Length: 280
Image (tube, rainbow, N blue to C red; front, side):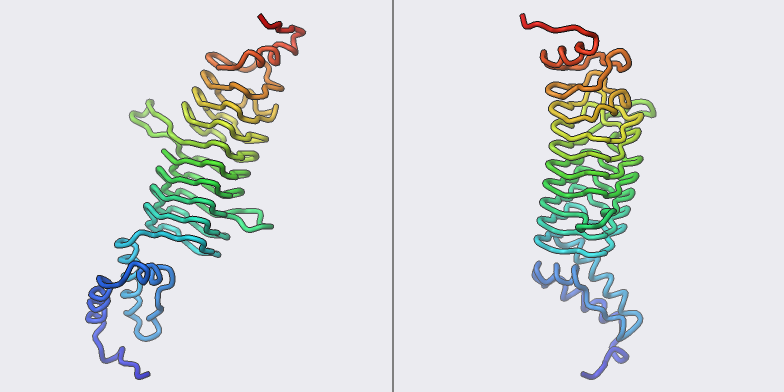
């Protein structure tokens, strides 16, 4: 095929691409976004057209992926707001500083079997994002904005939440927290210093979770599973601890002001002092 790139002005190619993009079907636009044609070998300036096509496609269509595999892909700094990923697999992918506001991930996997580190979400924008039935184990969410995000039935084992934001400051000293983490495995996760006040955090597994300096005041921690060594590491005043095994919790050393527990838990707390709680 004759190469005519040297005779056809680049700016006309650009506007031709714009014109044809308007009439592409959604399916074709998604193909371009996922597998853009590399035109850079025909003319150095054509790379501008290629990248414009990618950004325009993402701006004018909904990113909707099902049963896809992404291996060592970089979503860093990408605008994926409102994107939907169902039954997708992400192996060694980088979402650092990506805009994933209101994105949906359902039945997705973010780590390959045998790997010791998952995907990177450093400083990603994850406000109101939704993760349902996902495996995010060993992932990194350092500094990520997670205000309003939800994690339902997810594996969060070993996830690094260092400096992640679950709170929104109204004034320098006034803030509110909003995140929903339920039925998840948070074992060995790093939540040091996290602010999770008055959040839904019920039916989670907290084995060897790093909670030093964290505040879970007023949070719903009911039906959770805690290892004995975490008690006293975080502020749990006014929290709901109903139906939680309180083994290892020493009420002489931990401030339990306003904490809600069930009647049977009273006996568990008082047993170390030789007291037996009898039913009424």
